[in-house]
Amino acid sequence: MKLLPTQPWAQLGAELRRRGWKWENESQLPPLVPGEPEWVDYVHPRARLHASFDPALDLRVIDAEGDPGVLAELLALPRLDSAALAALLAASDVGAVLRGLFGARALAAVELFPAIDTLRRHPDPVVARAAADVAAELGRAAVGAAVDLLAAARAERPLESPLFRGQSLARRRQILRWLGVDRRGVNDAIADALRAAAADEDLEVRVTAAMVAARLGSPGLVPVPPEAAVLLARFPALQEWRAARLPDTAGDDPELLTLHALLEPVPEPPPPPRLPPWLDRDAGQLVLRKSRLPVVLVPSVPHWLGAPGRADHPARRERLPPFVVLRDALPSHGWTDVLAAREGLSGTENIPLRVPDEAQWEAAVRGPDGRPHVAGVWASGPATGAWGARVEAPWEWTDAGVLRHATGDLGERRAAAPDERAGLRLVAPFLL
Image 1: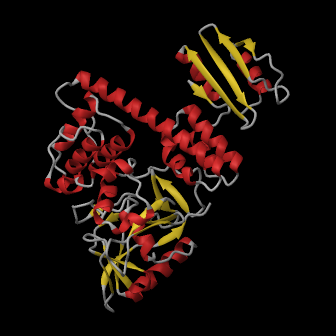
Image 2 (image 1 turned 45 degrees about the horizontal axis):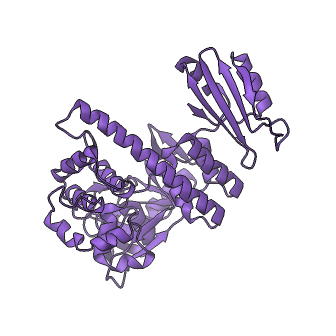
Image 3 (image 1 turned 45 degrees about the vertical axis):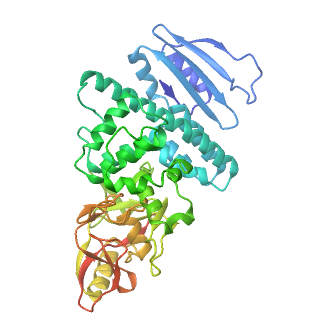
């Protein structure tokens, strides 16, 4: 068990002794902070722990082992948990961000990987370098743990791969993407997973399995669908940008953008540590506090927008400020109806809701990975986007009366007719 206690060692030691622990040893070097030794060992009749302190980060780490019942009592200590670390990672102070990074590394908090990965592009070079190091460690830890679980499940059921059992289509695609990014070769468990994916009913899963097998050095492991054969001709590019993170200038290349959509994992940011007063949670879903309409949070991560070769809507990568958007589009009949719905709901919620601009709309329904349809690379029709926005109406409104095609080619746009019926999403900035 690892914990990040927040009490000074004097208080922490008193609390441990009250719970039956005894001091055993500590660093003999003069502490940089009076009363805060570099490390301390405590023992219990059924457990032991080692506590260390980093004065530069004000970070304490307890590493304990022994009787689970004794260790469970340590959870009552004041400590940094995943939510507290997420708040540190989002702080503006460099010292707080570094404390969050190294705290996440100590806890192996893989759920914070997306936020940490984003910090690799932090303007402070110390933060950026630390984030890259911590992201690499957490990535290895997450994949290693997953492979161990896969191996155990495979031993129980040797004739099937457990990787995709019970997983949604979006999760099957995401699992394959992470395998392609984080692994460097194929073991038995991954080979079984790729073979299972190659027989999946979804074309995108089958194509991604072939691409991941090639990326991991086993191109003959699974059958290659015709759709993958063209993309495999770009295999040198796969090796050049192993993590599938295209440079910002690559969006005009349709095949590279398709590779990105197939192989780049969708970021999974941790939930925000707190909510603005006009938002609430209802059974795990964000809702507007007064109307109870469900909304989804679109995080501030780079999004591929536009489409190759479209002069009116060129492919580009943008990082938008975070915002929330209605999960389900409201029905509307003409631009006058759109404006009335916006004013009415803004008044109900007492917040300035607005019709999304085209970049916001596209980021909300398309997600960050450059997919040409909400449903994926090839599939079209009603679907749920990467951030949870549900798409049903063929056309939806954006500001200035421009309609965007929601169930087909996301690049299609046109001016609305005066009495146009279309879906309406409203957005608000996510400000804490």
